[in-house]
Amino acid sequence: MTNKSIDGLAASFLIIFSILLGLNQVLVKLVNVGMHPVFQVALRSTLAIFPILIYCYLTKKKINFFDGSLFAGILAGVLFAIEFIFLFTALDYSTVTRVSLIFYTMPVWLCLSAHFLIKNDKLNFNKIVGLAIALLGLVLAIYEPISSYTSKQFYGDLYSLLASFCWAAIAIMLKSSRLARAAPETQLLYKLIVSGIILLPISLLFDDFIRDINTNLILIFSFQVIVIMCLGFIGWLWVMSKYSASSTSSFAFLTPIFGVLFGWLIMGDIIDLQIYLSLFLTCLGIYLINKKQS
Image (tube, helix red, strand yellow):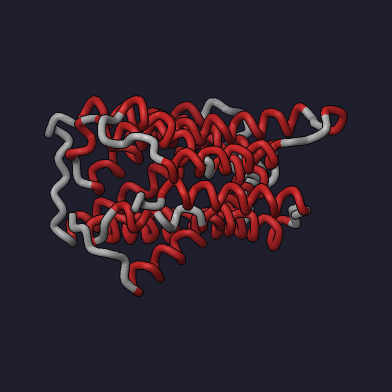
């Protein structure tokens, strides 16, 4: 891995990848009509394993599960499974806009936990200000008068937040455990293989693991697996192998913007002044958290 700064090629890919991740929330919600969320997670993880293995073979990337990272890798895979159960279920309960705003507060929880758990990743002025601003954005995102706050909204918000916590926990493991020594391809395969093994048999226990499936939903799901999970994450692995982590993380604020945009364009989510302000504060906070201290 190098410390190369972001150039035009990498910046273009990171913007496209952010667009795909933002679009992903909409696609998941659409496919939930045809599949139970747990079955969708399980099937997506399982099917994505094979293209990643093919990529590793063609690029001669070595996959080693016995470099001391096995236990941490399995734990990361379990957290990955739980994260996406929460996220996909949240989209069953809530709007794409609301879920995107809450889920992508992950850098807030990562920043807070890293201060206490990782020796050389302490809070600085930028991070503290970014945390405060992003948390204010989160409060705005979930604020509803008590009289209009439904139980469905509550569970959607709760599951989105729990998914964000799981994502932050995985990121902490990638930084602080023996998993940090593993190649990015190995890290991704741990998550896909373990989550697939756990969730596929569990998902079949649900009576409605197949709901109202049709050809359009199968095509949307296939796009998720091939373009977002496989091509998107293979591209991400390539960027991470060529460019510095600090440079790539500066693009993190783009994903919730695209998530809200697609929620409005495709799902008809209502975007009012409160959402605009929440989105602005959340993205500004994420940007400051990832901004390198001068």
